[in-house]
Amino acid sequence: MKRHLRLFMLLCKIGLMRQMAYRPHFFLMVFGKVVRMALLLLFFQAVFLKIDRLGQWTFDQVLLLFATFHLVDYVMSITFQRNLSFHLPALIQSGNLDSRLTLPVQPLFMASLEHIDMMDFISFLPCLGLLGYALYRLDVAFTWLHALMYGLLIVNALVFLFAVVLIIATTSFWTTQSAGLARVFDDLTRVGRYPLDIFEGFWKFFFIYVLPLALISQVPSQALLGALSPGFLLYAVACSGLLAVIAIRFWRTGLNNYSSTSS
Amino acid sequence: MPFPSTAPLAVSARNLTKTYWFHEKAPGLSGAFKALFRSRKKCIQAVQAIDFDLRAGELVGFIGPNGAGKTTTLKMLSGILCPTAGTIDVLGHVPHRREKAFLKTIAFVAGQRNRLFWDLPAEEYFHFCRVVYEIPDERYAAAKRRLVDMADIGDILTVPQRKLSAGQRKRCELVAALLHDPRVIFLDEPTNALDLVNARKLREFIRAKARDGRHGIILTSHNMADISEVCDRLVIIHGGKIVFNGSLASLYERFLPRKQIRILFDGPWARDELAPLGDLVRADAQEVVLEVAASATAGTAALICSRFSIRDITIREVPLEQIIESIYAQPHR
Image (cartoon, rainbow over all chains, first blue to last red; front, side, top):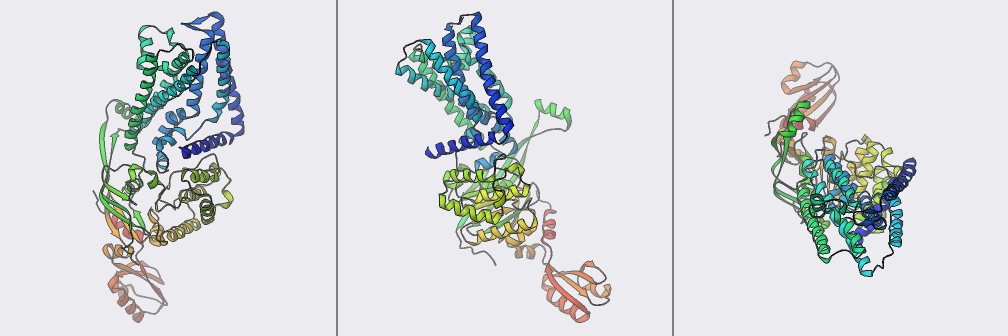
């Protein structure tokens, strides 16, 4: 564990050094990330100038939902998302996965964390500020239990997303390319930043029980607001846990099917 | 000198087999379109039930034509690929389980691949290796100093990889692969992209590594100098099967028990007198190369010295490439 933590810190450092290797690119990336975050906030403010509720959710609650979604999304994009969705298929296609498989590190660790995107930290920090602002505006008496559940459900959301992204990426061992499917899922997860109450009937059922995007931000936010039932909490944890087990087994099968490329 | 068979086994493979499946596609746009809906699955037997051993301290050359199965074999022995059938034991480990203890004792260097950080200097990747392989500080410093010196890369350690030539990158890659002092080393075309001086230095280094009796080394190469200058044993793989496994001397004995006599004449010579003594490989005004049966070499040389006025005479082996070419030309499947 200590070794992996040390390795993770080193990969963060290497990620930052890689980004800084090209000076103009570095400064343009910083500018781009700040603009992206500001535009998203402007969009939400514009929407709530017209309406005062989204489904059952007030503006301040939506702000919490939005901050939670982006918190999860940035952790995912800083760490495993691009690695699994784009770098891994490229490594499989070129045969460069060979050199990763001969390192004395879990192949899944390297496949998930080799490229740490430190640029997304620039967006991650204002996101934390936004979360603080939303909590301040909500004016709700939070208990430590709610805060603990919020933290655990954020981790749960990351486990869920990791499992889905890993399952999609693992198909590359057979299809060689899975980036298309990864992009579709990436777009689909964007639904998670809105309250799922805005959907009716089938789609509401779909996003809660079939492709439970509710786990990403709605469930942690409800937990923080004290509006999550114990039953749904259990469902959320079981769902992510089961999917993670399936994903890791699928990954192992995929790895055994790796055929490399000729030299 | 034959390698002592009492040295402990480092690698042992039995009945090793690898089958690949792929979808056959017709050429052109229409072929690509049809393959989206219907394609024929075909299989290739890349490696067919081979047995192979490597002892500690031994250096084995693995050669074969393109697509013969040598790299696939190396990848199975190093745990990159799972064998379709057969068993492998490398220092008491099953490679495809990829246990940490196993991976810390091997190195795989692929000639055509680049594992180093493209945008960063080699020094950064060396440090990464130090953390990954948990190399103690003192051992790391000593190994790095020795390897950097051997590979002659001291002046390029701080240059980003993308700015280096293919040969320079290759030398950095080799240093990175050997920092943790692996016991079994798999080298896939190690001298590819190296100039003559660096290729020679690398061969000397590989030879010295194997001589200490702790390291078992397998190398594949299309460069016969790599094989003839450093290997104790030669394995020729063709069509996924081992067609020869033995010393260089026994290869000559089995496939081409002949030698070449090079004669530099002092004056004129007659073809009719020389032709019955052997096959004329080359015949110039002053210089002739005659190929004769190995057992008749000494007698033929003595006869030439007594009959002709010569300035110089040398006896040499038939070039290794010639033998290898004749083996590759044989039907294999």
